[in-house]
Length: 419
Image 1 (cartoon, rainbow, N blue to C red):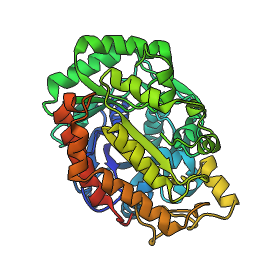
Image 2 (image 1 turned 180 degrees about the horizontal axis):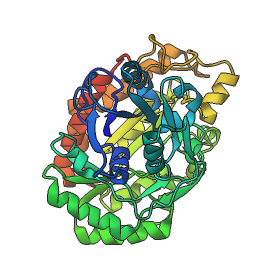
Image 3 (image 1 turned 180 degrees about the vertical axis):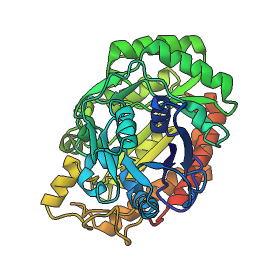
Image 4 (image 1 turned 45 degrees about the vertical axis):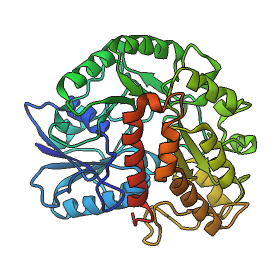
């Protein structure tokens, strides 16, 4: 068969910060390339052709890209081409996705992909393939040949682990993996990184896409000790409770933290946490979820002041977004606070807009406050002011400026776009 892997974009413009979609590298690595031919089109960096002559179309989607994914799927199903949809959105609300796909993958695909291809060839594919419990990914190998000659970011994604032990109310990870997590073998990850720098001339920074790289402290320490030997620049994301332990080395209102069920952030001295990160010259990307029930319109200035005080490398001012299938979405729906029946499909919804009614401010105040934080923190003056923070930013000046100006451009490119 000829198989097309398609990654839709959330809006019409190409992205400046697109990184390689690792999910397709997993599927490609599991595909018998002697029998099947694979091609990849990623709408964040290129057009997706609507007239591909293929036997199978495979689409991955998040909730923000679901509307576009459904349009692409409809186009190919009308041509009689078999369509599969997977990804977090498909895992969260498979009932909806089944309306637009011939087969839906729920959860991880490793355990079912080869079986699906055989059953499809034999003419008896199932409507749903489900693998909720994380599979053994210790020996998973990513086929990065599908990314050859595609202009992705100089930040190259690598996966060490999958899943997270926390179950935050708003998070898709907890809703899909339900507190489960699994890891690849450290030696395999290190060899992959070496190969990346050997074969990818654009690679400058390795970004671990793990939902929480600190899910297993012992394995994380093993990885970090091996990374030291490579003398490379790398980034990761993880729960802030890691700062309890200097060996391993977000919303400040504790009432909001408890409402989120974000137990990893309870009772923290944030000033001390930031001091620890800066002590070790670590760039900090502060990621805020704004709009929980105890936030008021005054909170935007507080969060800006806090971010400017500490001159964070980056700050993400994210409006709390009710993703279907999460406890946050269900709670807001039960409270009658959703502004749209299905915001991800609604023609009136725009990126960055509110999808629900906040408790302690108007919708207009909420939307204006989010935009103000994004714009003011990323003015030319503010970027250069943060660069000269003596702790870490100036030490990594080239990366700091490159990433901040890409981020600034994306803020304006995505502002108010229609999904």
